Image 1 (cartoon, rainbow, N blue to C red):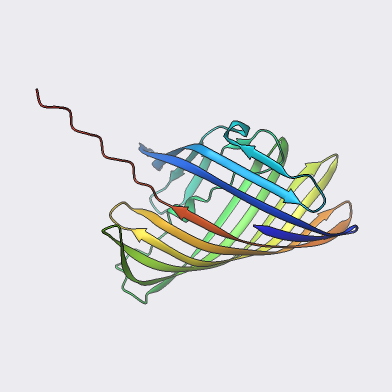
Image 2: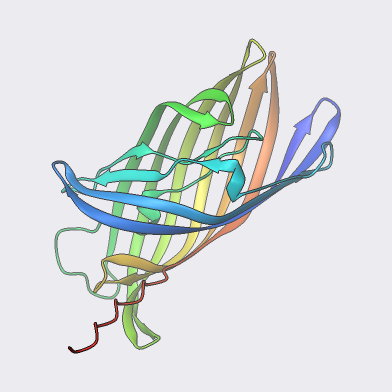
Length: 240
């Protein structure tokens, strides 16, 4: 993702990219389904026109991903991996993998809308405490079916409009952000596995960052790609 922030010293260009492999396991939970994720092959890079380039890897990440999906699709994130070094976030949105469907059969051309509200009293941004609130309205349209590697997948067009607000304490002061987000793209839903097999989205963000009484405009844009890699079935033991 690339971003441009207008500061008193001029425009600051930022480029942020990351990739990771997340191995998910599922278990029954009193509140629904417990999903645990082990993150590996993580890498992230932050470059700026005003700061040195920062690169981090799996050794800079600690903790596992854990969230619970309720019967109606509501999700509670129990834990999220933390970046132990630079002030960067590991980002994972459960609704990318588990969008909420209406309770009836969908035909090509059908559209439905879902509003997702997320909040956190405290998130980890390196060693800095922060709060966050986010409301996103998703619009889904079932386009039709497609076949990938012999599996029939449902193609779903995705668009979203959201607003996010973040704040954190830095050096005795408060840094806050107020952002408007848009998403456009598509998902390929594997009904047999109950998971998104492919997700391709483009995200744009416009808003401002406020600190020390100054408000600085910021604009960002970049892609989000996700691929489901199915685990191999266990081999049968040899006949005795």
